[in-house]
Image (cartoon, rainbow, N blue to C red):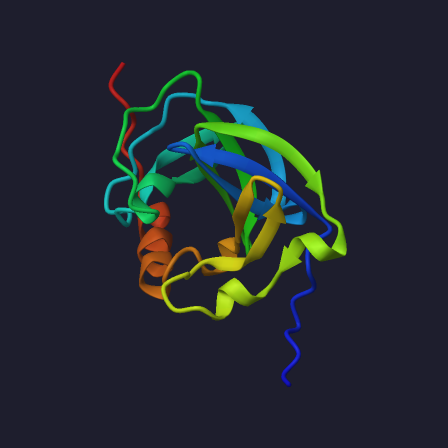
Amino acid sequence: MSQDMTPAPTEVLLFTLNGQRYGLPAPDVRELVRAARLTPLPRAPAVVEGLLDLRGELLPVLDLRLRFRHPPRPLSPMDHFIVASAGDRCVVLRVDRAEGLRVLTPDEWDATPRQLPGVGYVAGAVKLKDGLVLVHDLRTFLSEAEALELEAALAAPQEPEPA
């Protein structure tokens, strides 16, 4: 029996998107911020909605709706942004609502969903009384091609926005 080297998270941040609940391992979460206007990023992969200027740091905002096949919708002031680590890169996730941190008991964590076909980006699942919540691994969220495309778009000189 092979051992997975990724330890089970002890806390996850639960959030909703299009009426469905998802989670992120708490160590990957840097902060939560209110939605703000995004700057377009030309030549970025389709999964990037734009850039967020967070205290002078330009961060790519990933489109979870596109990735999880939910219908698109415009940015709302009621949306929440989750600033998180995706490996070495800091990214922002636009979600409908961040619900908060959940401390897990050992029997609530299930690592088997990551071994099922068609559940990419999944680190495991949390078994809650009201259902299963998939916990996503942001290190696998972007394909290698998308990561390279994002690097090239971020490295390109940005046009100043018209006043």
